[in-house]
Length: 112
Length: 113
Image 1: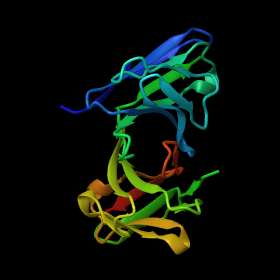
Image 2: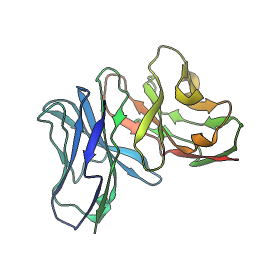
Image 3: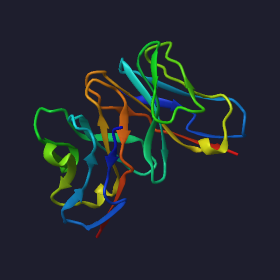
Image 4: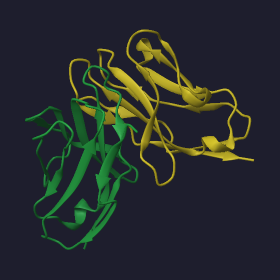
């Protein structure tokens, strides 16, 4: 089944404790992206990647890191999480020319 | 900078009534335009997309949207609402030649019996 998977689905952590949210797709998509969803703000793009080793900042990159060492994986790293990063996070992927994105199920992160 | 405006954070319609969800974008060059739907506790799924082939785009579940360049709009419609349409709807744009995606704030659709 074609899909985007994220792990973990739920995470509660404390301020400053480094964490990684994994994202993997099995559709051989070139493009992958991370978003955060907050009430009243819709989805805001954090980082995106056009292919392996090629990444760029979205609208809200501060406090986040990404890497794209393999085509199928695009982990999101929070090196020192803060409470304002409490949010619902989505990973998405697409073929580069199509632009339509396939979304993962989301990761709900709470930072206390 | 590109922006997307969805008019109305909440829209309520009766079952069987017309659904109209509004989306305006700011780009002077027509971008790629999308509508996504999010059901409770789920990720987003594509409803339809505009990529310059036709101004009236048909999507899944009976939804359609019309691209109007002069109005920089891409409103979503459905002739007859069903209870199962209750969800949050997001309009999104991607600049042609780029990959940066801008989403609107979303419109939550309520359908009354």
